[in-house]
Image (cartoon, rainbow, N blue to C red; front, side):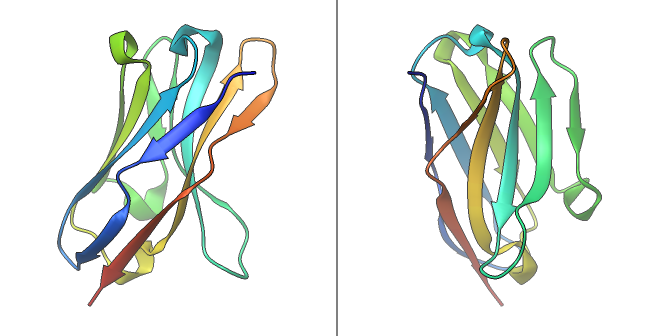
Length: 116
């Protein structure tokens, strides 16, 4: 069973940066797309950014210009570079992958806390 393992979360002051990583247990080419979502307690999970296996990407409006999704195929890893962080970016960030067969795979989540 394919697994996704996130890392890179932590605590940072407003204006700071973090880079999240999501590594697949198998080949990243098994996924048609990878994405990052985030969730605050009591709220629905929110889309952050996605990257397709042919390289095109899309970023949600609240983080546009501050967050960048990228991938390293050789390392089977997707990244989320987060700059100019704001307190409202505080959330648990989840990595998601859609397999070529259409099934969803989720990581365990990593906490990001931004203090003012």
